[in-house]
Length: 259
Image (cartoon, rainbow, N blue to C red; front, side):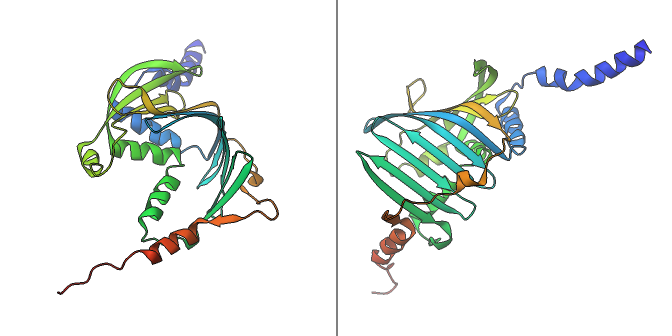
């Protein structure tokens, strides 16, 4: 009987023993994180964001609730601005911005946005990045990662990945100012979630952007009403889809062949 109990105990401890072994290379960490994130249908967290660009410096805090496929409620506050962004199952994105006592409300209906607009392509790219799994996949496309020594954050041991922008990505960005060439990702060894992301202009420099999630709750039940936005009565709503259409109509036609 004692041998049988020891055998059962050994089986029970196998997953723990396997989990206790830290991964030793960046690819293994990314694979682990991508697989773990497929198991999360929702999450809620407190977030903080620091922007440190030559032309813009800002600190903000807020909360985020995310539910697959792409529903999100993001509410943030800075010293001068309060912003609420809501994306519902109808694929309509609402953004309410309060600055200096004035409120602006913008609406983007993804069903009515032209697909051949560069602005639309950029917005849709941002839209897809709301999913943590997509963020990880995009990071892998952008950076060549190296695994640094682990650290502690929010009571969990973290894998630390530092990435150098891939040459082909640098080449594609040569037409404009490139503020970001390095990325640093803190990934939980237990949950595989990105708890902190830093982007820097060069190795060793201060981050130009740092985003951190705390009080994280995974696979949490989120009420449908969180992802529904109703503008206040008599609010003037700026229709971003219509603005994109107007901008495209004002653009000159493409050049034709011949003399």
